[in-house]
Amino acid sequence: MADSTSGDCKEPMIQIDSTLTPASLLPRIERLFELSAGKIKALASAFASSPGPPVITVTGSYVGRDWTEWTEGFHYGSALLQHDATGEACFLDWAKHGPWSAWRRT
Picture 1 (cartoon, helix red, strand yellow):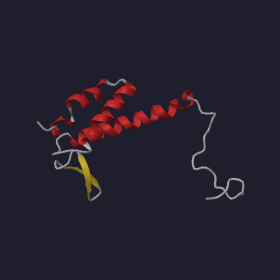
Picture 2 (cartoon, one colour):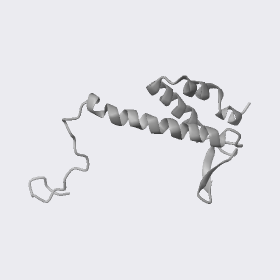
Picture 3 (cartoon, helix red, strand yellow):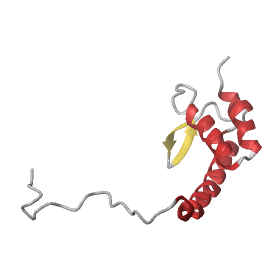
């Protein structure tokens, strides 16, 4: 391990910018949720009638499989986080009732 006084220390991996403020990050955060909404809607549209959540890729495209459930929570969770951040009711409704509700086991 290099001694910090020897002059051969590497720069820290993370550089802290103390000039950042929550307000200065707001445009990027808003853009993040604009993009996220589109991705969630695209997944909902593409996989609403799928036998299960998209888990693996086949020839470069995600496909649904009903033999595993571990990724299913990401879809509900993503919709809930989107609703929490934006207040858009459709995402809360999707998290509660679908479009992924067909995947739920009874």
